[in-house]
Image (tube, rainbow over all chains, first blue to last red; front, top):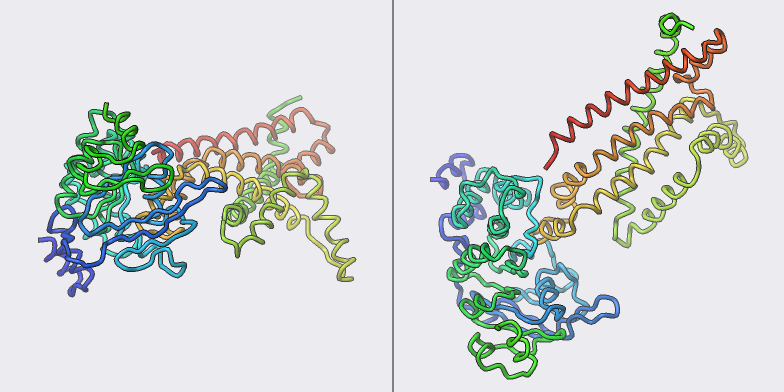
Length: 281
Length: 225
């Protein structure tokens, strides 16, 4: 239906609109398909980040495949969030390289604004735009960046709201929503740009316990649809259930990584064991 | 003393002055907002190429905040022509009105830039990050996300600055601007009705400022998040 409307509006649809329209008819991921690639989706090589004299990341190497869900765990101050924020260059790495889809995003000639369109991010504090209603929060980026026209973007926003279970809230301001609802809107906002990678920075840490489930539910749905996800989390249950791989970051390096079973049930390092003992009891 | 007799008698003069007071205040505030926005954007810019402008902005705010407006007015009206004559040799005249407008604008511009800077800094850092993470550029994030919120935050201080500028314009009486105090003084000189005249001038100011406060409260309510 909406596709036909768009066609009537514009007469002819250009390729970008066509893809977008096709996407918003499919699932929550916007129809991102699992593509068989020989190359990993994200490659991180020797990633370093210092703040002044404080070395937060001391050389991280990692490869993440398309459709993979990676959960990043570790003690506070270990560099988990910094690692995640380097992946879309919210933090500028001090050293090392990051490749997304084979493109070096740490190259100083890389167009970071273009790259970020394909990498959605969800923040611990939601960071919804308080002066916009829910629908505008979601549709603003595609409209501003001229990826979709207003009608298409709002249609897409409504679809996403339906999928995160908040159809009745489109005219609400963020301040009138609960934490869990705000975070689900934030996920919808990130998805509006059709990202094929989603980064989650402790998405449930600022939520009241009874609201954690609804947000994790949406994330599980996303994972099931094949989204490439990197999730910094303290939700060990989620990591066990949903992650394909778990990174344990400690003191700026990935100390240990493997399947949830390997990391949670058979940790190799003493520090991993100590950490898991603390958080799992 | 007859308050109302003085009012009827002096009001043509006082209203003429009030028109100048309000007129020059409005004009200088419009110019000062533009000046203030640019000064503020220079002051918060982190780009290396804009660094000289950042220094200029800092110097400007430092200078204006550090000197009394009376000194600035005197400087622009009396000292600047002399300075220009020393440099160029030409006889430069600056009219009272121009000197007054420049003084008020420079003054309000410096304070407004600080108000804007504070408001932009008061917008949560996560807002810029969220916007940038969606692929918006710095400029797009500023206009769509940061500035609309900053405007709401700075509104009370902005109105406050408008009121201060309106009242400070009376200082320009000292260089001979024909604003309300100028005419008040003339009338008092003629009639010795100090009490009644200055009472009415005070009442005029109170009326204008009350009107401003009323309007700003309404805008604030409309814009509240």
